[in-house]
Length: 165
Image (cartoon, rainbow, N blue to C red; front, top):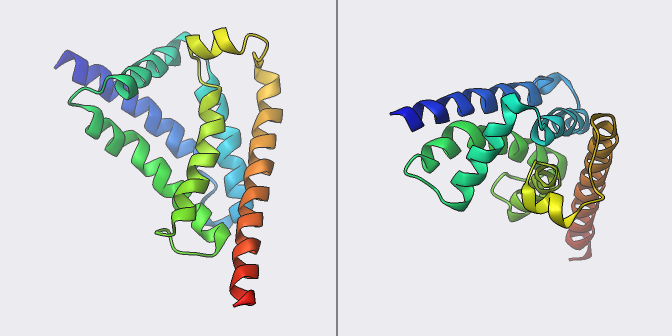
C-alpha cells in the first residue's frame, strides 16, 4: 500500500505536467501545439529539483525493473500524453493515427526530450552536456524545429510517392 501511494503521488505530478503540455487546445495550430508541448515538457523532464527528482528515479526504476504497478502507471501517466502527441502528429502528417509513421514520429519527439532527464549514466557519459535552465528554452525550440521539419519531410515524401504512382 505504501509503494502504491508513492506511485499515486508521482502519477499526480506527471498528470499535472501532462495537463500543462496539452494546455493550448485545438484553437492553436498543430505546429504551435507541438512547440508548446516540447517547451513545457522538456524543462519538467530535465528538472533536477528535489521535489521532482524522486519521480525521475521512480520512473527509471519502473522502466528497468517493472513492478506489478507498471501497467497502471503507464495507463494513468504516460498513455494520455502519448495519445495527445499521436493525435497531433497524425494531424501534422495528414494521416490516421494507426499509420506506423505516427508512432515513429512520437518516439522521435519524446526521445530527445527524455535524453535530458536526470540520469547518472548520461551525466557520466556526456560530461560536457550539462544544460542550464536558460539553455533549455533553446534546446526545446531546437527539438520542436527538428521534429516539425522531420514530420514535414515525411509528409511530403509520402505525397511525392503517391503522386508517382
